[in-house]
Image 1: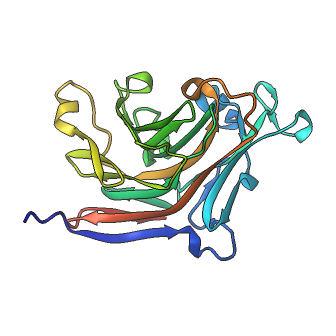
Image 2: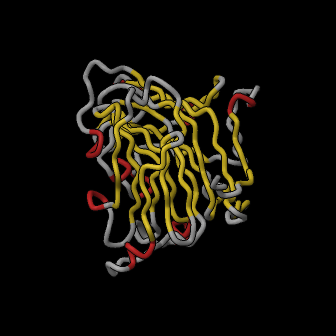
Length: 265
């Protein structure tokens, strides 16, 4: 019988254990606004949401709530009074990861126009290396317009945006109907994507570099989780949609056969 790789748990976040209902700011940062202050109007994707801290809560699970707001909410976006507020959190400057297995157990929102994402960015972005040169690794993206769709992608110099290296599979049930585990296994030579126990894609470093394209995934990354609304990827928002929730039960990070580094700042 074949023996799989040895995994050792390096870090975990079990949101059911947060009895105080507060997200630890020793681990997590909150993005605020519509991206304009970061030079990314509409977060670079023509999105509609204004991110707020109070859109992120813990009720047994981490819950990121997108809520339609009225023009008198006091929130102003690049297009005028905000139509939506939502939440975005990340671990930049606090916790980083390099190689290993990262798995997130989550339940996607429902509603056309929603765009949940569980993703990683190269930490050198924080030192001024521009996207996509810093590298982006999307563990999972989904849109409410495609509720069965599981998609994992990498972006780098020469393969970004619509030309990112990606694969899509279809779940037998909507991603909003149950919790699923979305994972990557990342080594010096490859990245693998998993939907529950199914490995549905592998991208080999040599295949990327043989096309003359760089592989920016030999460095620390940080984790981002957010629920966007609208934008170029998600498309038009259902005018009847009033709210949606991305729920995250747990995050676990493992080394694989001794390879994997948790970086604490």
